Length: 246
Image (cartoon, rainbow, N blue to C red; front, side, top):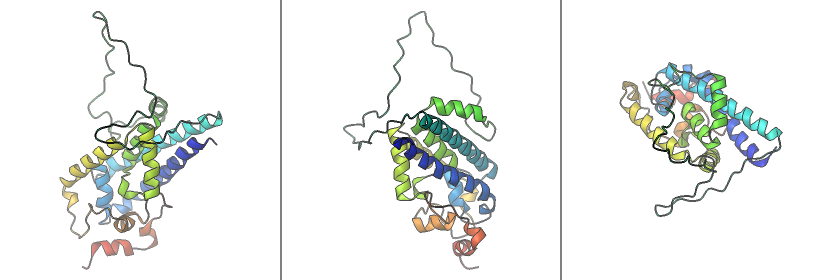
């Protein structure tokens, strides 16, 4: 297995395990006070919306996994340059080859119109792409952008991850598409959107803004990068602690 492909596949496998676990357990997690932490990562407590995003994220991750395995079968690796620290004075150099810029259009040549996209086209609840659509997207986009899209659909934010795994994701997103800023902007937007919803103020003492490691372990029972567990199936203690005394 080529070294860098193995590095990326390891992260994809962890995301797939997490996404499938959350998809299977999110319905009963939604009955607990700590669910607001999960909901804030999606910007909504609507289960149908969350499940649609999880479904698309799982399908996209599976498509990326297949693409990487097919490439590995040819013996070709992926260039994964070392990320450079950015500064305000010196922006980081591009880390992936950029496509050649098209020539300036002549006065008589008009660029082809973009395909029509209906309002909300990127919302998987009304517009779920087919597996074939996602296969094409994965082949066309950078790996870093695809990983960013997967994280957004699975509601993955830095506070949910072990430090080691977040560094792993950061390296892939930064070196192969520079999507970290996109992820963080969307994290902020979703948090702000969730704060405006009535579900953001449940009748309990649970603070969904608290992303300390011990709080996240009460939400999930694990951090992303560790083996997923279902604490509600094992013991109600974490949720009892979250609700406080009657």
